[in-house]
Length: 187
Image 1 (cartoon, one colour):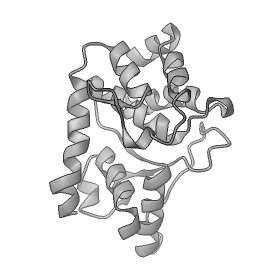
Image 2 (tube, helix red, strand yellow; image 1 turned 90 degrees about the vertical axis):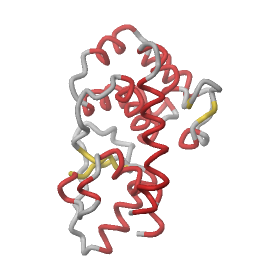
Image 3 (spheres, helix red, strand yellow; image 1 turned 180 degrees about the vertical axis):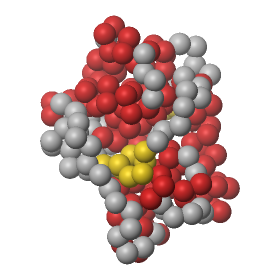
Image 4 (cartoon, rainbow, N blue to C red; image 1 turned 120 degrees about the vertical axis):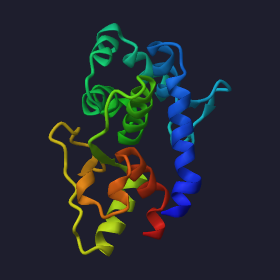
């Protein structure tokens, strides 16, 4: 945990600060949807495996006026997450739950501190970390399948923050997700 807090948590906070500093929602959607981090338009490591042409298509759909207006009205993270999932969840999109979570988190960060993220979203590495930790602790951290999840997404689940042991429970959910992903093989 100390290694995460002293080294890795800073990257997530830097990402958050960057998106908070963007001038408008359109720019935030463009940066998040295309997987860019920073003004150099470097692709974030989570999005490197996605075909380059798929992200601009998803981004364009998020910039659709109807969706953009829905994003502006979001009062909590889960609402924003499911708007992004509408785009990523179509089989033809070539996008998936990791893209959806990362994009939603970055757009949420653009809004500053609108409220806490109440669930730990589990996909890809974070889901593996959850499985490993859960097995180690005797299956005490349940993972739930959201009813809105696209049926072909077998790897999108969530867990409740309160179900995690301390000191994880003391972290914001996005840090729990990040920790599970980064340390999946060591849990």
